[in-house]
Amino acid sequence: MTRLLEQAFSKVATLPDAEQDELARVLLELAGVEQPPIQLTAEEDADLAEAEAEVSRGELASAEEVDAMWKKHGR
Image (cartoon, rainbow, N blue to C red):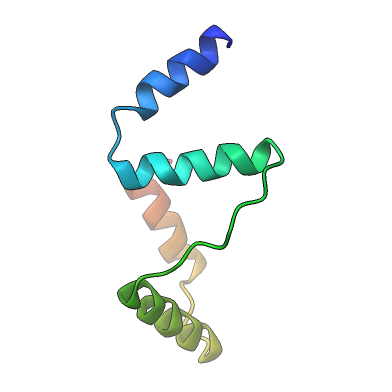
């Protein structure tokens, strides 16, 4: 194992379990190991349905709103 990969594993090991699992799935997918679809919680499913409805209604963020969001988060 490379030093960089060891460093990444050490950092990831300090994250909450759900984040560790998410990163593990990504790593396995990148390594060519097919992963089963992620099962959404009822709340996540409802949030996704609402987001899709907003898109269908054309309720999208303006370019200015997107720029403001990125500036707020340091990008």
